[in-house]
Amino acid sequence: MRAITKIFGNVIALDNVDLTVQTGHIHAIVGENGAGKTTLMKVLYGAHSATTGEYKLGENSQRFKNPEAAIAAGVGMVSQHYAIIPELTCLQNLLLGAEPGLVINQAQAIERAEQLATQMGFKFNWNQNAEELSPGQAQKLEILKLLWRNAKILILDEPTAMLAPEDADLLYAKLHELTQTGATVLVVTHRLPDVMEHCDEVTVLRGGKLIYTGPVSQTNPTELAEKMIGISMTEHSPTQSSPGDTILTVKNATVKGEKGEDAVKNISFELKSGELVGIAGVDGNGQRELFHALMGLKPSAGEFLLSDQNLSSLSTQQRIQVGIRLVAEDRHDEAVIERWTIAENAILGLQRTPGILKGKSIDRAQQTNLANTVTQLFPTRFDHINQPFRDLSGGNQQKVVVARALQQDPKVILAFQPTRGIDLYVADLVYQGLIKATREGATVLVVSFDLDELMTYCDRILVMNHGVLKEVPNSLRSDRQAIGRMMVGADE
Image 1 (tube, one colour):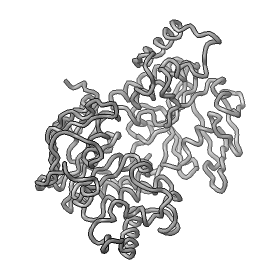
Image 2: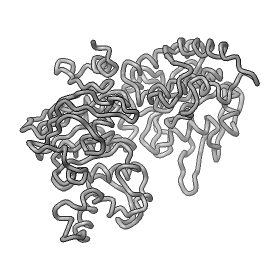
Image 3: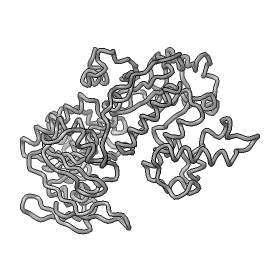
Image 4: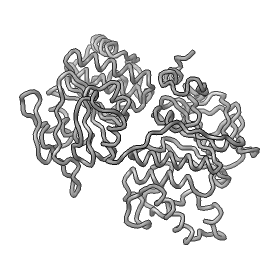
């Protein structure tokens, strides 16, 4: 790709970017959110047309008008947002748009599907509806769709984001096998350990510009991180806490899932003041249901205590008032009202806490003060606090949601993917903010699908697998592979 520029309105998403990828290699594209990684790949895939620039496959100049043309030329892409249709079966999703003819021989289709799945180390029930797939399985099915279409250049956007370390290593091992048969893989990722361990070359983008490209063997994670964000990064060791009294106690908790199954199965744990505790696990193993039960959003069995206070009879509003805070997984559905102002969203959920409620109405001066505090805690870009919240970028919205959870003397902070959509530097600031809250007497429970993040910042790590909760022994606290085995139940 040569001198690729892509302009959206007044925004220069890509600025004169070059990219050279060797056949049979795994090439990583890294950078912060908004750096232009996915945009560059979508230009290659025909989902975006470049404003200027050109690219070649081998010696042949190309400019795909659409993804169909790219697929016909052997270029396929799996984006972060899967194109799986829930109501169709796994086999129907695999075939959709690439049917072998007007009449489909089901037995032959399943035979080829099985061959491709076996080649990649995947297992599927081809007659199962896709709505029953976990996010990780859906991602694997998307990869098989590329192989079904005989793609020779595979573009994978954050392919290991929902996978346990063991599954991620297996995926990369299979990708290496594909490259040995002549395939080429481009991986968009923020996981630098994946880059260092599994990729041949790496390209760094920042602010739509090419910053660096070269062999992975000639760089290191710290250097890459600094190139990604443009400033020096500080190395972190796991925090050393001094736990105090028990704040949150959960005993024999069971929580139902959407289909009536036991999503959380008779779990017990304690959180002490001064602790930042992480929950590792593949998405969909009960983390969501546990957080909803702790906030009073889902009925549950078992005992939930805040210090000595039984939470079972308290509404969500009352739980907030006694000091429980939530950084919701889906901020759009659970954390903000986008048409409201930034100032209104900055106190959303806290409007009945002392200092904000004055009589039966909100103290507007205190609302403004709190909104200013919330928006200044992490570097948030906006014009004024009375503009609609929807005007903020996704990353800036997330900063406000996290900063809000740290206000008004929290006792328990439940943070579900708190660094989703924000840059490396700000992600570090977020964790430093959570750690500061623990030093002031709170306890923090974090769900993250980034195991390296949990290993870096947390005092203790718990693992959820099929609704069962286990604690990682101190002796395995720094063993990524051992924790990964616990995440998929392979430790027993």
